[in-house]
Length: 178
Figure 1 (cartoon, helix red, strand yellow):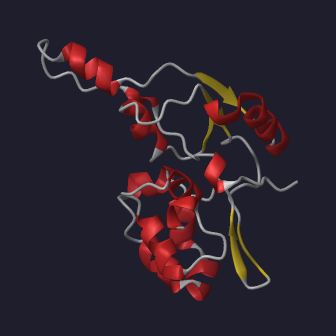
Figure 2: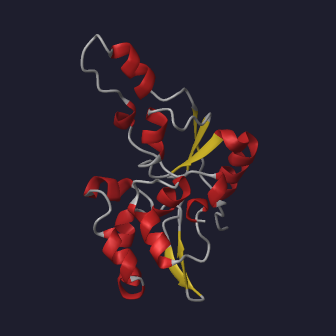
């Protein structure tokens, strides 16, 4: 079964727990830093199949967010710009990191990492713009964890994929590209 995700309804990503911890510089500003650096409390659920993820999203509605790479979502949560009540981790799902071409259109799975794009033979041969962007997205650590779909779902203004998608004129754009 194919995992279908409406871009306007979900944010994709998951990061390390280290990115959730505040930097404590001195005791004077500890309280204000804790308030601005710790995410609001949330429940964590690991989905093992697309059907389970969809069920959890339906159950929790707009209070839930998908976790895959987290390079956009986790910083937004840390500063409380995003406050989901439930995080649905899809990292254990098999077959969600695909890059395929069907009927002249590129399909990118929710778990396709930036490095998958960067080193893909299909992308290199057919989508030169994505190859060029794939080599310069953030730094190697972010490229190893980050997902193209997550960057587009989250409409990350600091994400390189949004600008590349605008330049490529995607058939089904993210809401932030409309």
